[in-house]
Image 1 (tube, rainbow, N blue to C red):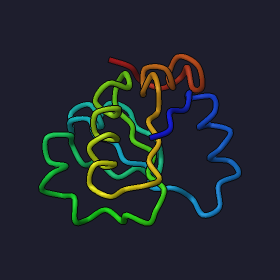
Image 2: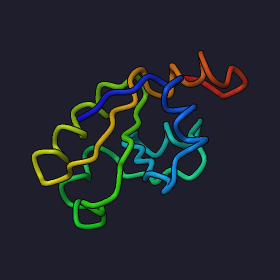
Image 3: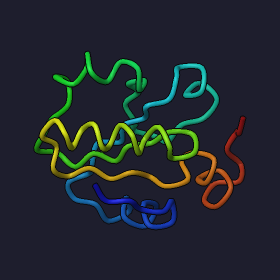
Amino acid sequence: MREMTVQEINAYLREADPFPMLLDVREPWEYGICHLPNTELIPMRTIPVELGKLDTTKEIIVICHHGVRSHHVARFLEQHGFDNVVNMMGGMAAWARDIDPTMATY
């Protein structure tokens, strides 16, 4: 698993080809407050059941509120055959603080 800061991910997404899957593992109420465009919401608690929906060959950037849940999910994905997984360190809180200060926070 790689870990990238929000600044690194922001720059990377501008150039990424193909575009990675942005996997948000927060709860629906959190996602409703703020999220990045083009993300897919699969709450952490449902990842084991939803694993079959994910493409093991695609790069996946895992996102949560502060980077802790996403770290655990990224490790879980690696243990289940996903080779190209990135944890967004600092999560949406860091994104709102450092990249998009107009984003709603909680």
